[in-house]
Length: 153
Image (cartoon, rainbow, N blue to C red; front, side, top):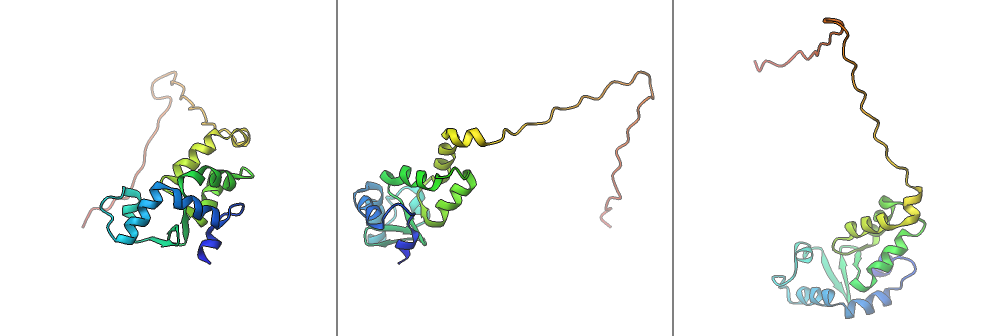
């Protein structure tokens, strides 16, 4: 039930399970999980070993499905449908799925998306206004006030 509710719409749990069975990375994660030996596993999974569970051929991180490498691009495209923006896309993915470096993959995809770039407002930095030089001595005065300060008594 958890695996069925964690999948994205447009992709069946069976498809994810089939691809997970053939994925070398997830096969190694399942082997480490079954043996209880994470010494040979790369960092992302080793650090999260207490959150990893295996359900059949699916690898789960908590309540989220770990997506195999072959499906990551498609899952990202499904989550990005409608060009909701980078934050909304990440939220959609984080609620149901996970894979190592998912955030950076979303950011790269967003930066390459012409639809998103066309509607994203350009953040303009206001120009710095230079102060005009005074014409005569003592024409302009400025004072910085600070206090009262604690004395430590």
